[in-house]
Length: 376
Image (tube, rainbow, N blue to C red; front, side):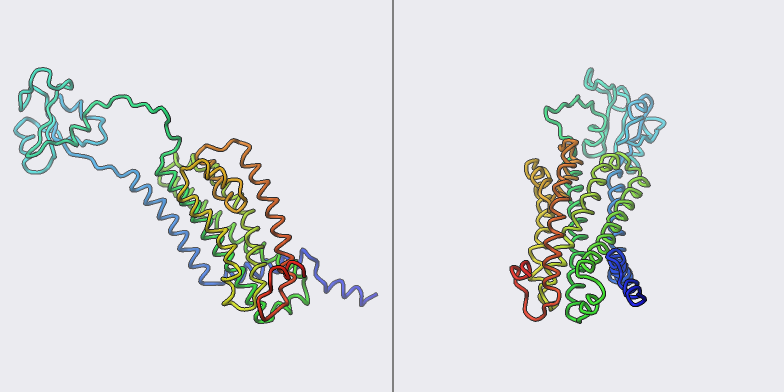
């Protein structure tokens, strides 16, 4: 009785085993200087992009002009011009010749007698040695412009958002996926896995690795999103923040589920080899599944057909569907349907990955053929 009870106490449950392995994975990564440095650099890059976007987006060059008398009313309120009051015509001309201003804006009857009806604004714009076309354009009356098919989102902004979603998904999935693959092969090559399997099951070991690294990747994505939102708020870019809000939320949800699928595949394929030099050859198909969505969203972010297909293919949905949400081309129900497809695919990938991982983990030497790994 006592021996049986002691055995039951020494044998950890599946949940306990998964928790221990996941905690071990997280602790090892957080102690890695390379991981901390790369995460810090990524955070700084995100913050710098937000700040620089604010600086260059709000930076406007104003042109100084000398204004005389009633011409002040025409220049006031024009963001492109900075008015420098001049007492009279001579003072304005002196400012222009000394380079203090770029042009003079004066009433039509002042300084140079305008022809009757030459200017409906009743002012004259005077330059020094060349026509001040920038001042003339700033003062010109713009006609009302209408578009038959206006773009919902500025094309440049759409490209930047597509690039942001694509690069974050690509870098995070590839970085953590490669880390999982290297960890599996390292444990297999050093025979540590044999010690681990004497205490826990292969399923618990795989689940712990996937959960631990998924939590780290998910935490990194949340940190990036939080930092970007904070930067947009502090730099006054609330309009852009309002447009990104829902698409960022969907990106985080899709990424969290999609990464579990990719992590299981990275771990399973890595278990088929016993040397670190062979990791690239077996993980290349999974790596391609990460790279293809990145290039597609970069080159076809303005193609609704390609984006629609991407939003339903499980490996590209974490990028394609949030992009369509941002562009406003997705119906309210489409993200939920795409998410259901991704969940089903992830469950299938985890089951297949667990079988390959379990059947290959203790086989050393030559690469384990895929058929043999599936059969067991």
